[in-house]
Amino acid sequence: MSSEITQNETAEIRPVAPASAGAAGGATAVLDRPIKPPGAAEPDTTVYVASQWKLMWWKFRKHKLAMIGGVVVILLYLIAIFAEFLAPTDPTLVRGGYNTSVPYTYAQPQRIRFLDRGEGGTSFRPHVYDYTVAIDRTSLRRTFVQDDTKKIYLRLFAQGTPYKLLGFIPTTRHLIGTVERGRPLYLFGSDRNGADVLSRLISGTRISMSIGLIGVLISLVLGITLGGISGYYGGRVDTLIQRFIEFLVSIPRIPLFLGLAAALPQNWSPLRVYFFTILILSIIGWTGLARVVRGRFLSLREEDFVLSARLDGSSEMRVILRHMVPSFASHIIASLTLAIPATILAETALSFLGLGLRSPINSWGVLLQEAQNVRTVATAPWLLLPGLAVVAAVLSLNFLGDGLRDAADPYR
Image (cartoon, rainbow, N blue to C red; front, side):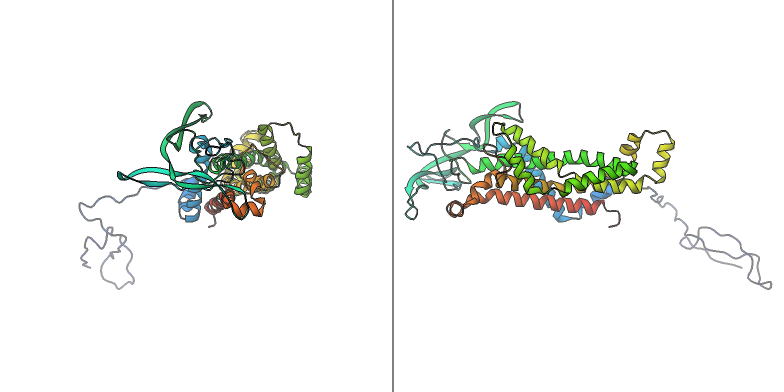
């Protein structure tokens, strides 16, 4: 039997038995795989290995809203870290009005104008207009309106009120300020005390975002510890911890906060009130995570890798922290990300109702207290800006948490 074999047809010929006894020839050519052409490069047999975190990142990048939410959350925490530098003035500073000792109460927001038109022509010189005292004909109240004949020039990295950058670097530089120190600068308007709303809003970002993060971290420790013990040991320990969780969940939130607010000593410092609020929100917020951890531990404690670790002589703490918790760490991260906005909303609601933080602490809830009066909001709508900050933070964290949850789900 003759057969012409080309380079693209066969790479290996192996003999097989003839189909029948009367068939001529002793062997039949069988085509197995293509022949490699002369001079051809070796095929790439590199095996690419992706870790669980890299797979999560690839899936997370496809979630556009989660990416946007992550960028917004990073920006908010950067604002919280560099709050003093970004704030034009001290958030507690109250300035007197022009040629008067009356503070700039509910002063209108100043718009930055970049082109300065003067007698010598137009030049690039950022400035805002100063205020002048006027009487509102409707309410007969003293108001501050902008006077376009008085200009206040601005500059970047201007000298201002002294502070410590990152808590230990003394400086007086602010991102933006007036060329002439002491002149009013209210880009987002002022409140009833004449304090800058923008500076208070930036300062409130640090308080509100840190409460959400620190509170969730404390809940993480409590939830993993008690939930892990409950699911790992089971039996009476599990029953006792679960009854305790059910007891905490059954406590009405509003009466609890009312009682704590009434029992809170009035002579406590703002820092002590701040940490007390974080502690209360953490104590009542760890129960959901503990139940999730308990359920995962109940299903994992009979797995082969857990049994192998026990037989290998690993301690119970090592089995829990080294083998069981990392197996669903991605789900914990997603759950914590979704828990941060709930903590922020809880603090904002408590402070808004006067049950949480109080002035002079600046948080978004404290700033929104001034927006309770409809008449005040009608005359100074910029007091609602902290509410927009709350909405932006909560939506961004929810989008980020949804993206992390979908990325951590192995079945999606």
